[in-house]
Length: 239
Length: 239
Image (tube, rainbow over all chains, first blue to last red; front, side, top):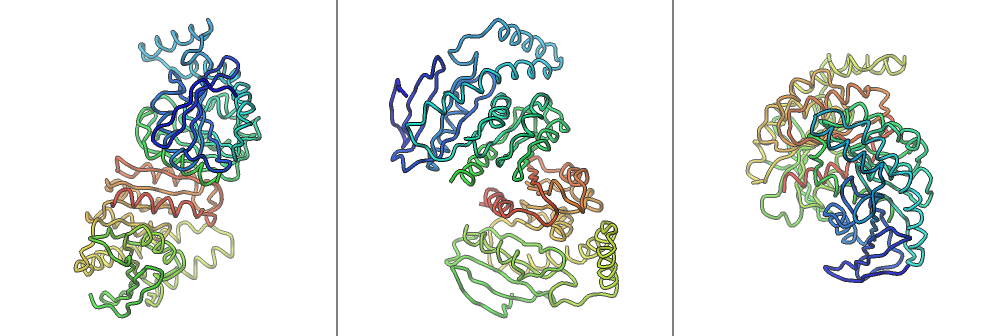
């Protein structure tokens, strides 16, 4: 892996890299320890690898002695958008403004991104082989779950995953293939994803060990304590 | 409060007491610290104040700097059973052996016990006033929830509560009166309490801050990590 930057702050070593044309960032503890577990962080829609939810999760993970990596999803950060991406983003903006249902648009858009993102994550894991990390986990909600579920279904190097806040539509089949420990977070009063839909996705996971966490509030009210809980969940399973 | 025993082990001071005719046990950290929060521990059906689930939770709480107290529920431990208690216990045994539904029997039995236990817990809190504890929480599943929900509904000194594994039938009305933070744990494949019933009870809590935790497995498969999670929940809200 050729790193393009290498900085250290607050006990965190941060290195930026590019795999093929995909920008990514790797955070490791200082000192690094032997074979620290690695968490793949999947960002949400409209965000990127260095948005505050990603750097905040990286900080918590590194403080616990784990490494974390995030790559920009297709069409996110500085990555180009396809004509289809741009059209769907416009349609989603219009639907939001008109107060009509976002679900079919988001499901289609997320699925298309996931098809491209799954092999990109696999390339990234390959490219990080020199770092000799320990067990690998995945954490991501919303778009991070739309990508993470099909990824974890096919990528046996992922041994635990924290998901949440996502439409089940295209995820039920890959969720059934996942057998590693899963934690799934939902919002009890989510205005975008029905309670029934969230429970159906949790139910679909093939994992013997899985936990559903539900908290009151709308889609955007996801509480900070669930972020901390997902870090503890990953620590428990990757250590 | 007149304590009948006073022993110290593993950094835990354990004192037994009797309030009216109710035996209880108080666990405090050594050294005690200033105004440690106090957690009321409600034991499950058929158990008592010093059963392993109670001493185990007390150990976790005391290690985190909190105090814990447990009293025997009516008809439990060394406390006498009424004729009605004995009749219901016999009927529950017969139903279990016959494979018929336990729900109506347990709901009736638990409700009757809760009516007596609520004022007993209030007496216990009064009797512990000299200890100058900080904020008070409650933790208990099954019978511990059947007693804890009506207790937390009327007892304003309880400021956070961890519940779980209980039939909703007589608890929906008091649950609606509860407004303090609540964590509720259910088993996703509970053979005794339906998924729908568990979700309905979680939904009923009047608390703005509440979390549902669901894990796979039957009623008896309640995972150890949920006990630890309830301790962290209480720490977060009582500290």
